[in-house]
Image (cartoon, rainbow over all chains, first blue to last red):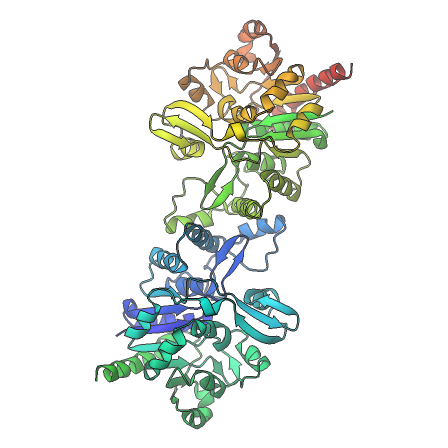
Length: 316
Length: 316
């Protein structure tokens, strides 16, 4: 069994933690969005990579879903004294990750080597691969100008109206070594419940990845990040609406129909079932709102069942 | 009145704090050793500049004489998880200084501009000038090989036997803008009680500085860092001995005789007085061991008296 998951940050991590606990984690490969990456205070920050790694290592702050638990913010406080705006919350332990990453990158390592060194250091047994070692910042064109995604989301709290999204330099980006091979070997490819536009979107935009999924559409399953017309986490709903997408399980199924043959939707969205099926996408109705660890494990078990069925299909 | 002080780290800072409190701090310019500077974890660290700045800002840890008071070390702990040896103690607040410095330097600023931005941010009213904006690491040749000064002092705890000291690239270094002008305008030049070899030595080795002091020898006064054959702070005594210098007030007077006409020695060393005077160096006997704030202020007052006498002399 090889499960390959496409992941953004907090939403994806909840499900990944469930999977990590119910399967052999060495059979799990996670391809993580790096469009959110940003350089702040001269340090290279990879928010989604860190959220996934900290979560699986049991280090994440359970209240926020990002950063370390029991964290302090003394460096940031002193940086503010030196005139650096502290809009991006970097904790003291978290900064060690960014210092380590920046030093490795400056020394010539790729982001994937950095990710590997971090996940090993904190004892994560699943493979964690950044989607690309190239720099492909997600830029948001808004009614207040062009903003880096983090400026839009964190600094401006998703207030400006979104007109377009682009991933700078994506046409020349290459998948990280191992990404296409992992997709090829996968008995199941899981699209985590992350923002389709700015978490899963950048991964699919790396040349070769969307094509690889298309070729493995029967093995690919998405967990819908929209429940009852709202995002499970973050501003997905608002961004989808501002860009003219239908904010529903059906809207998500339309975005993924070419790359996945199955979608998990919440019982709240059961009524969309027939219309989604008419798109050629199978529907699994299962609770997708994960509040407790048990919620995460139960959904993960259901996905494992699907993966088993696909592995049988692949073997047949 | 213009006082210009040549300073290393902890020893110098005690006296400078006294001076800072008994005079108009805007009339004080401090030229600081940067031979100790080192890049660790990709961050540019200037220990002596920071010790002087933190001390005058009232931020320094009173127990160690370096770093911030009430400091935490969470970043360093996590860096150790990533395999970085934590031999150099970098606190969380302190790291903000290094992150700020590194970002400014990478952006093209000089070390003197960084020092200026930091001292202003923390409200220090004296001028703080690094001796040079060039990189001139102090290297120690030892019986265990060639080491950066911090590796010798902090990592190896001054255990290897010193054979020679050099300041890499010093022959091409230029004094920071303002240094020579400050020395020229000074009514008094003060050599702080710092290690003559590796704190004051690098400053004097920057082309033009030793010459400037020689030309102003009558205005220059040194506070002897050796009392009763021991260093006030750090491994000066041991280093002097290993390099064949006499470890005494007389030995220090010999090292400085060409650049200063007056030296302050502790009552414990009064017996050296006649021999020092025979070198052409005037002696002021005054307590130089500064345990309390009052000790620092009393010695500073005595130095101000000397400075006043020299200003009168300069004016005459």
